[in-house]
Image (tube, rainbow, N blue to C red):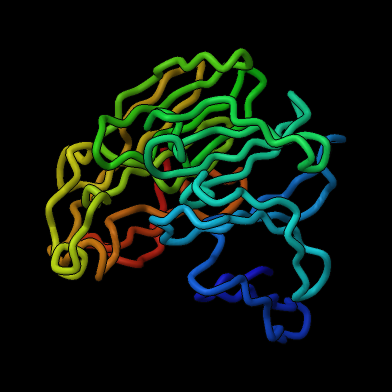
Length: 281
């Protein structure tokens, strides 16, 4: 089991319970999510992640691949001035490529197509908050994702193979977390601030929502292309400042949930903060 703790990736041996010394990603760098790449001949199989960090200066940001226990190598680096950080990397067996979603602002909000083992990294969509996504699902019809934009209206989109974007559902906040539940896809909105030009006072004590965050509730949406999407649950954010005491979100177990219960964990909510919750629908 891979464990990201601060800026170190540890490996927990589930047979003997031993925790490795870990791999230091770099000061302030961590993965937002790990990605398993498999069944595409354009990129080698393996576990990958992209650097996620507070990077207003748009310093170079790297993509890493696991080689063995506590050993990772840099397979690609976005140069200076291109992106702030990596949100998601998605394995696509239908189009035989790897997709990378980056953020956060201006041209850094982009979707990249990777082939030929990172020798070709093509920016296919950029310079708009509708390309700023963290939760992405690969379907035969294209890429299903929700936007992560606290200062504009957010949507669930389908990006078709020709890069045209179809708007599927307006949602009430930015999206950082989601999961696949059987044949349905789940997105959780976030209660957070604007994220731009945040002063130290606003960072530590602010509770002013970004204009894309419609209310004080964390909303959960569920559905698919055939049935559409609808809200299935919500909880109110607690009264604590956003950046110091966590955004209001729902987190989900990694991978595809094929059980009859949708499991999730509310964070920074009034009633169920850090509890393991389940919905049976």
